[in-house]
Image (cartoon, rainbow, N blue to C red):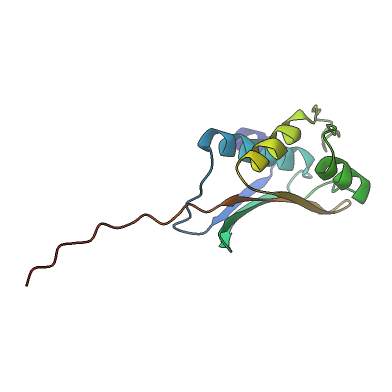
Length: 147
């Protein structure tokens, strides 16, 4: 997404906790992240920023993608989170989309045992947060002890 972000002079900031392992389908997780970052760039104002964070909380990885852009009102958020209807909106530079990517993201997040939430302030920012279960810690083999 670097080229797309550079075209709008948008900074992408990534803040991920160390040693973070999740239990999720790798290809589905990549699709989710690509779509959410792409949307964040599309809806960010030129010279804005997109911040991607990942941290641990209560057995889940909390992943957030926050933009500095158009924002959404409560009706738009309800449409996205509460139904199977796709939602489309034009980006800050008239970028078009179908809204199908976000529907697919919602389905993949659910299939991987997570949840999606959206917070936003119109004309300022939108934050899309989703969870996926943390991977179980790997069992370390016991070393034989010699007396």
